Amino acid sequence: MQARNKPVVLLVAEAVTLAHFARIVTLAKALDPELYEVVVASDPRYIDLEKPLDCAFHPIRSLSSAAFAQALARGKPLYDVETLTRYVEADLALLDRIQPDLVVGDFRLSLAVSAPLRCIPYAAVVNAYWSPCAEVAYPVPDLPMTRILGVAFAQKVFDVVRPFAFALHARPLNRVRRKFGLPSLGSDLRQVYTWGNYTLYADTPDVVPTHDLPGHHRYLGPVLWSTKTPLPEWWDSLPGDKPVVFLSLGSSGQADLLPLTLTALSRLPVSVMVATAGKIALTDVAGNVYIADFLPVDIASRRAQLVISNGGSLTTYQALASGVPVMGICSNMDQLLNMQALEKLGAGILLRAARTTVEEIFCTADTLLRQESFSRAARHVGDALARHDATAGFRKAVADILGT
Image (cartoon, rainbow, N blue to C red; front, side, top):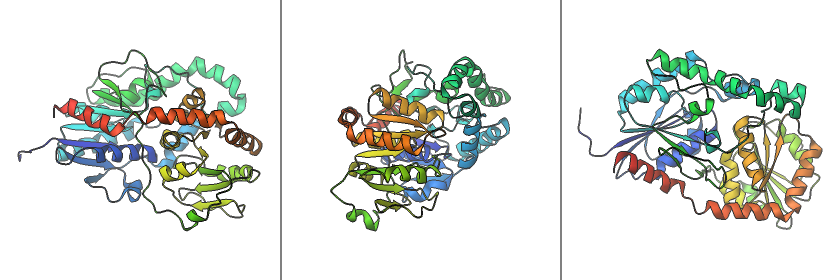
């Protein structure tokens, strides 16, 4: 084997949503190519949003975003044993080809099998609200049970059955680990989601507090990313005499909620910038609506007085970094946990996608725009976030792990 003069760092994204891909490419770009050979592996479905990628790229397969969303909606395990086994086999081929000194993964659960099998240190990037050490309550997601029983009663049922549900979701990866001769990670899904030789939280302790973290766990801070797409022709035509709302339900949001939301916003004296992610063609919209497939989230957030999203961390952290409050129209637990943290900080309001109405969206948007406390809280959180540089934190973590 040819001698190498610098360590190889392989970063792997499970691209079932844009957020996982976005965080990985942002962290890859943070590493100095003079110090490391950097390689990214991901399903290429989002690669056009990040061209050029100034490092080697290897395409791998991920579950389709539609299949992932369907499993979430039904409350079923996201991956079965057969899928994870195929993932492990693909991982092993990739690891043998790249021979990295460190592998970093974002929701590529199979790396909890493949990396140990090749004795390669593995660092998992994850949101802190999935940590067993997180100080959070777990809200019932939008499941068939929730729609039948109502949120309040379904939450009581969920509080009782959650440990069993988490064990059910942890079972496939544990079976695959045993299949390859590795011990179980236990019945707590949080251990499965956060396992690694090193665990890196893409949050701050101000937003998602934890307690008694193990020494190999550390906060990076929010990993901020935005598309590099050009601004649309209408950008300079936005009226300057009324508030601007930025609406994007992202890659994992329910695009069919966009017309409902626009109907609600048509009752307010605002201009609405909409990023559809290419998932829906909007017709017959009000004159105050400006549409694009994609918008640079950082620039759009700085232009807005309110951001409406699916509640995921990618867009909400960009909004908070710009000091802008958030309305999160959430469906899965990841979104609910993220927005629950924002609500506690007073910087946003959580709505449930399965139960929201035009009237609720209208009243919530009106409240967020009118009550200065939300903007003040968002600016306060944004000031705190400015003290955390996730890319610098990642560079230090890699240097500490590899001794460089």
